[in-house]
Image 1 (cartoon, rainbow, N blue to C red):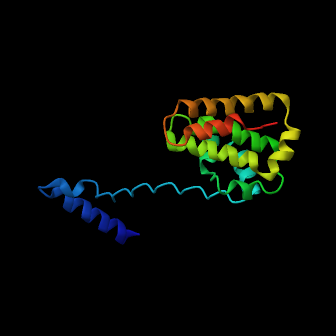
Image 2 (cartoon, rainbow, N blue to C red):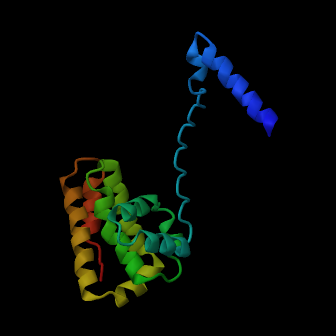
Image 3 (cartoon, helix red, strand yellow):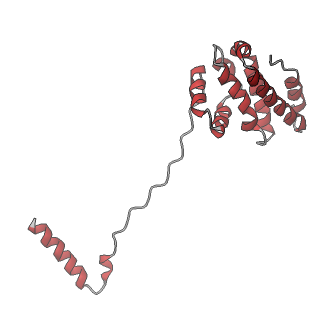
Length: 171
């Protein structure tokens, strides 16, 4: 105990009497590490993954939009191959306008492709039978918003996609 105290005092005294008191300055701090980039969310591969992600994002519109943007039109038939909860399916459809409108023509086309893939999936047939009236009205409004945006868009294939959405039999 006395040795360490003595050493500390000697170091302090030598620094105190030194003409340059920079030795008393704070020791150099370590450089702060750079913040790590957020890891990307894993892709949605199964209906269970979709339901878990939907339940986590429910109530948060921005999180739901991020969830919908993670879906790929080519993977939707596999994801919705088996039965899925109607509120999940219609929640995803109703989040399409918020996720893709105003993001550019390519995103708008992807939203239409996602909608067509969801409606063509096996699980949609059972879900549409179980949908409540208020959910039906909200879904029709979402599809109408996408169709209007496609009509206003001026990219190749927008007219064809708008026509497909107009002919879409939701119920």
